Length: 165
Image 1 (cartoon, rainbow, N blue to C red):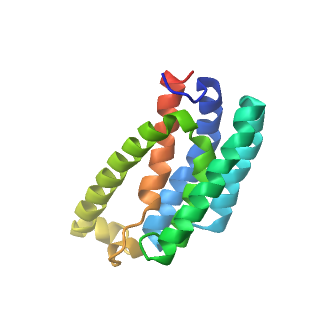
Image 2 (cartoon, one colour):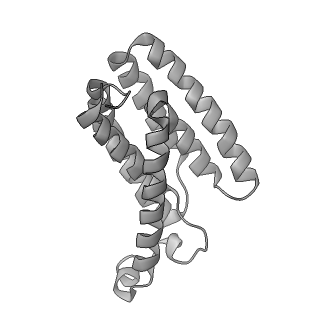
């Protein structure tokens, strides 16, 4: 059983999925995550989380945002992570219940590996590149982490819908 409420996870999933999918697409296409997507995800959590989570859990979860934002920006300064990735990861952080952190990190690791392998395979297929000639991620050495961040949030909330408290 996950620590995240199944009821809250369902509503968070419904409203965050379009944003998470847009972030994956945007990072593939432009190698950037728009600030508007980050703000939209934060707004979803602020409204839906306030309506579906216990007040104490909702309040403390904003600390997750601060911690991930600080760590993410430190990583972006070293070049290991883009600033947009850091901001989106921070916006995602409140969605993950503290009791589920270990599970989420394992899930995120698996999604990153799968997304990286899939990205590298698809960019090596000429027909795929012809179908999406304007995607910047095909030409860049860096990996578009939005391709892993968005789906990781969707998978986590989906699991929480099924196995949440």
